[in-house]
Amino acid sequence: MKYFYLNLVLILVLFIILSQVDYSNALSLSVPDPTPIPTSTPTPTPTQAPPVRLVIPKLSIDTDIEPVSIGANNIVEMPDGWDKAGWYTKAVKPGEAGTAVIVGHFDDQFGAPAIFYYLKQLEAGDKVDILTKEGKILNFTVIQKISYPFWSSIDDLIVPNQNRNLILITCGGWWNQQLHSYSERLVIQAVINN
Image (cartoon, rainbow, N blue to C red; front, side, top):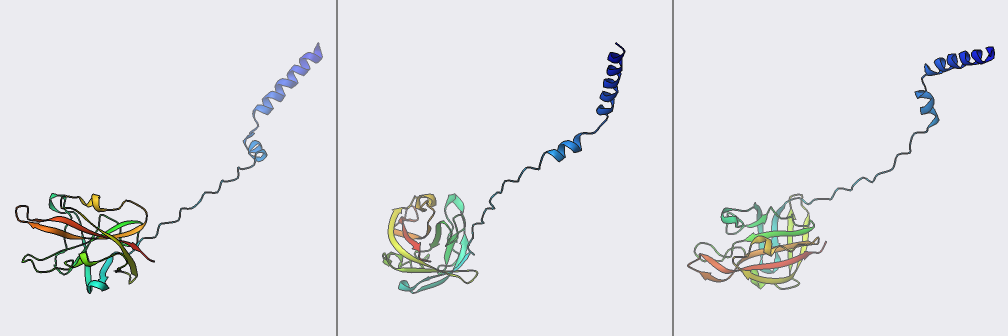
């Protein structure tokens, strides 16, 4: 019986001693650190510099491009000058995935030809060049021309895809004196070559 009490005392002493030991280091040494899982680093999508010049050799057009946006009555603004083109900044820049939009006047306030007066003469295969602010030349080829009703919104005219497209927009059809607008919107669609 005395061994029983002696063993009980030894067990209690051992229990007290072991309860005072810090096992955190011992446990961390016995478990290896997990191997980190490699993650892919996303590749940034390259962006183009803004367009600054439009060249259409067939029509002898070589003009500045200025940025335009949405104006009154949710209508796309036009460039300040009759001889200038406008890049619609709510769409992509020319050369980026999506559809870039360049607009221009058909005629001036007196009915004289403006920068896009002869745009209707473009046919599939004709060339359109855009010069960017960084000096890069983007070459596009016309694929088709389409006329839309004058009330069509800009969203109706933009081709929703990931190709690098360009559309040129001006007025077309006949002049409606009552509405102070032409009856159509002429859209030239082009795709990038490079």
